[in-house]
Length: 555
Image 1 (cartoon, rainbow, N blue to C red):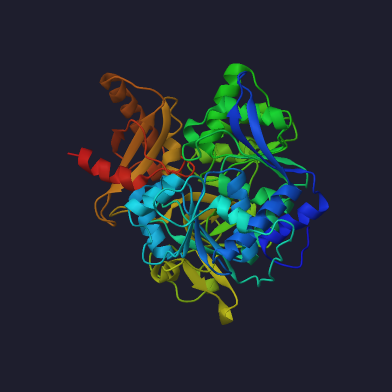
Image 2: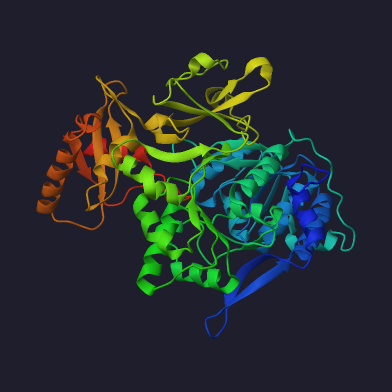
């Protein structure tokens, strides 16, 4: 464990710069030469630390202080890392939002965050001006690139104002002090700003290091920029791939494999959709990934068929790990591909949920009775017996305590503990524990289908129908008022089929459903060309949108 005098996550990076100043910290593809080879911009730890120091001085002179909420809309690269760590060093509060979530959602997020500063590329600044984002609260504008008519400073002006040779003294911060506001993807509702403290970031660094045996000097390929910020704190080299980060499901797998080969990457982070692309491309072109020690995938459970394609690419000791959690609490549980493929995948195919592993060190996980109402106080009486399905609740050092400017959402999602010492977060997910202490995921609570006779859980039902060889994936939705909903199975096939073929497939799916008690009541099957998915990982299915679509299709 790396110990520092401050819980500020930037102190972890600065300590790494002291220990390994010449180790490569970040590499980012800038252009390709006439031979098609990538030219990378590179900073070692000393350079990253010095540049973030200089920007911290410059941003402070521009008026950004400890606690200043600062929107950061900069493309992943050297400047993104330097600015993020500069803001952490100041003690400012970066506000991080997925830019691909759409203009309306972005405007809502920024209005709620009430930022005082906005650091962004010209495209982001133009959108800010046109759509009047956070106009009431913004006072400081910094443009990364060419500034047009919107005023403020450029990043180069900030750099010139910064001290070149004087290290920035990272202030001591308490673990409970706000470090950042990270917005959820909004896959099951409006995006919400999760308040991260310095203590949460520090705990996440320690948990990830211990959980996966990560060592300083390793090489990380992060296809999710926010996760990539952990790499410098862990002493890893962050390789930023040449890709569109808002469309991981359309990634050019060849470019990722090129980066893995060029830098001998040891750790790779990727969504299930991205892993699927890499696995298919590698199989077609005969690629293997001998340098990888581990692959970490999040955003949604990785399907067994993807693991079956991906794991043969890895050396014998390497696995694909799927940490379970959410923006509000990560990591909570973890499981590796060996255990999934050897045991739990077969039970998933039988409709028993998806195993997400055992709770990680220092995390308490429970399953409580299902309710959509707030819970005013924690009690052991809320818990359901082992094996029963309920809502998953978690408590521990990586659990966030509130949503920013969303008191109603905070009340619904949090359960105060005894004497105010423990706070439980309601994951909004349904699941159960098995006799081995493993947690099984059954789907989102808000997406359960409650009919007049029973409650159907999305994952356990869909798993039965996903066994059909022509089905890519399915999504169970409810049409009508909860309590009287009609269950409808939406189906995305692996390829296009004629109407006659779809009739045959539908009959086969209904036969599959009739084979198990918990899917027997599903009689409506609709074929959909391509499910709507979240922008962050392209993996979570927007079942709420599918429910509206299904309602229009039913007679």
